[in-house]
Length: 85
Image (cartoon, rainbow, N blue to C red; front, side, top):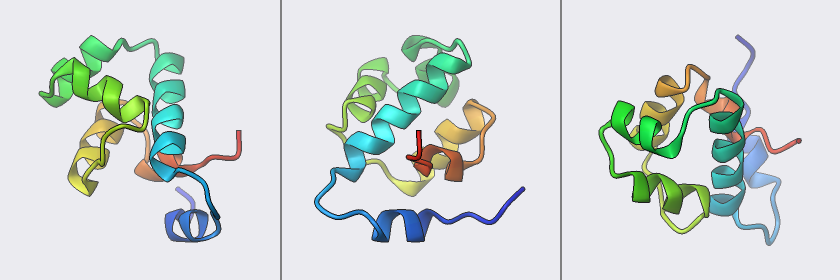
C-alpha cells in the first residue's frame, strides 16, 4: 500500500467543491464494484438516501463514515480522494 496523500490532494484544490469530488469518486468506485446504493447502505448500516446525498456532495461526511464506506467497498480511504480520473 502506498503513502496516503489525502492532505496534499485536498490542500492543492482551489475553489473546488471537495464534497462533490469525493461523492463523484465514491459513486465511481461503488459502480465499478457493482454495488448498488441500497446494498452499500445495508452493509454500512445507513439509509440509502444518505449514500445518495454523499454521492451528490450534499452531505458532510465524517471520517468514521468515510472509513466504513471504504471498508465496505474493500478500498483504502485514500482511493476515495484520488481525483485524478
